[in-house]
Image (cartoon, rainbow, N blue to C red; front, side):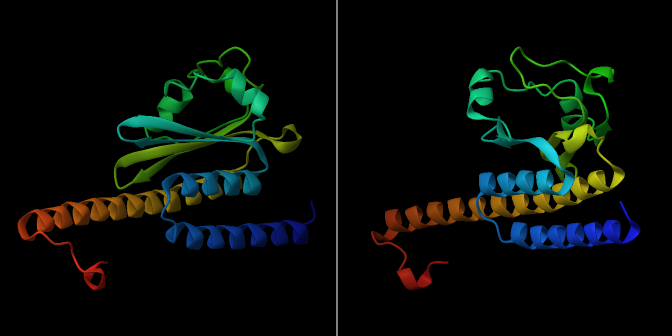
Length: 199
């Protein structure tokens, strides 16, 4: 790739990242935010697959991207366990970029019927010292390895995503508290909060 082409590509990526951060800051639906981050990560890095995992109501949930309906059907009930490479992100808070998943000492293998995957790039989604989720990508187009630039982009998106998730959680907590206060008001006075006083 020529120098000017590389500069142009990097400029486009930086613009996409900037737009992504702005969009994430306005998000209010957790799953939609995470799906958006996964799709952007795939577009920026050229990954064929992405997986986002997050915790909701004390349960790990997963958003797979890039797989066909048939591939997803084969994996029904075989969600990742958060050990192996995923454990490095969930538990050790590490960013992982490797060229061959099977050669990594922490690799835990894939369930039967899983799509073939070799290259891997993953990052924890952290707010302060808490892991709110993880994002990982596999199979960069052209059988190429993920680059340091890919890693930087994914780190940036993961950081923006962490702030967005924190905002969503905060909004949900406020709504829940407002609902509790309104119910308390109804119980004490027999009337609801006027519409004009609601946030």
